[in-house]
Image: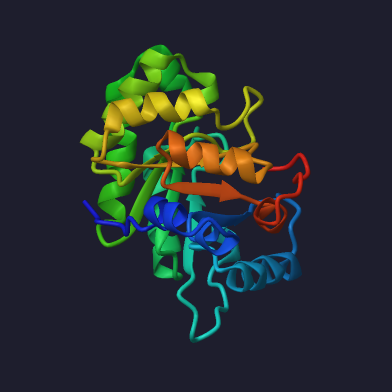
Length: 238
C-alpha cells in the first residue's frame, strides 16, 4: 500500500488562512464538455492557489506543469458511473499513471454495493490497485449518498482489504447527492487512521470545507476552489 502524505489536516489547523486549506484540496475540473483551454486554466489556478493536486479526466493527460511546481496530478477512473469492467478500470488507471498521474480516484460499482456484493466491490478495487501499485495513491469513490450506513462501512472495509489509500465520498455527479458530514463521520469510524478520507461533491463554502476536515476528511475535492478559499458562496457545481 502506498503511504501518501498526511500534512493537510494538521496544516489547516495550524494555518487558518487560505494557504493552509488549499493544501487539503484537489482542484477539480471534470466537466464533460471541457476544452483544452479550460484544463490549462484549471492547472494554472491550482498552481496559483497552492492546492495539493489538480484532478482531471484521464483523456486530458499528460498535463503541462510548471517545472518548479509541487502540484500533484489526479486522474479519475471508471468515472462517473463505476459500471465499467474491472479490467477496463485497471487499464484506464495504468494508462493514466503512465501519462503522469500521481493519484487515481476510481469509482466502485455502486449497484454491487447496494446489493451487498462486497466481495465483487473488493475485487474491483484490487484490480485497480494491482494495476497501479505504490507509490501511486489510490482513492476509492463510494457514492456515500447512495448507500446506507452499513453499506458505507462494508465498502470502506472492502477498500481497506484491497489496499486502497483513501475512501472518497462522491463523484459529484450522482443524483443522490455529494458529501455530507454524516457520511464522513461513518467513513472515519470505519477506517480510523488506517486510510485517509476525501470529501467531494457539493462543498461550496469555506465553512463546509473546514467542517469536513474536522469530521475526519484529510482531502477535499473542489471545483470552485478560489471562491471557497475566499469565503464566497461557490456555484452549484461539482
